Length: 300
Ligand code: A2P
Image (tube, rainbow, N blue to C red; front, side, top):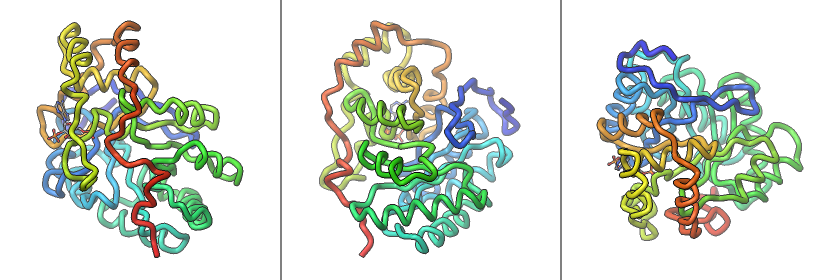
């Protein structure tokens, strides 16, 4: 992989999506980073740490920061896999096009690699009209792939039963406490790749308001013991768990040393014993909200 922005090239493997596009399996997440933090994090991740995949969203309020960081990195646009997401307030056919245009403007790019519906609406008709708009955006070439977030198996089946384009990815909360086996098996059956959000167990910030919970995975004794055995950090062990499970993983950090650490994960493998031990942590405890219980920011 070329690395014209400087720094050591990283051997991040790619996954081929059902659109035919290749997505680097590890990217940088930027939820709850300000525009200035995001600009610095993205500039460092691309220009120095060797990342080639950035995941943002209109609702994060930092697409401008991503655009500035991308420009400052010196890495050519075509070498970067860029994802953004349509917020629920903009769901609907016409509104999806306007929201997409606004995202491109803020990112200062003329296409994104992946455009995602951020959250499933309980209004199925409106959700399907939104998907129709995304199909047209994909056909125009301005989003190379389209997909969804937080879709439960029944949402994926709704799109499968409708016919037309299937999402390239379903980005869901996924980490050792919430292994999401049902979503993963449905997605595999339908040819949808799965991306993990809050892959390290979440930010512990106030992103979920009164529902916000502390991160317990980074201090979990089981993860810590495995990290010691490998001479790696708990975050690196968690990232390898996602990679070795075939998931796309987008750990968030606003700190250069952690951004660099989180991509320095291609010189060790978790053993079957490590994976089995981590498997015992799957108790279904979420850090975010359940998509079927929260009709987040539904439009009027
Ligand atoms: P920070 O941005 O201050 O570095 P997620 O599970 O959503 O990816 O959340 C990651 C959380 O863990 C963020 O709050 C981030 O904080 C922190 N973090 C990211 N990388 C590391 C790391 N290598 N070691 C410890 N904490 C990390």
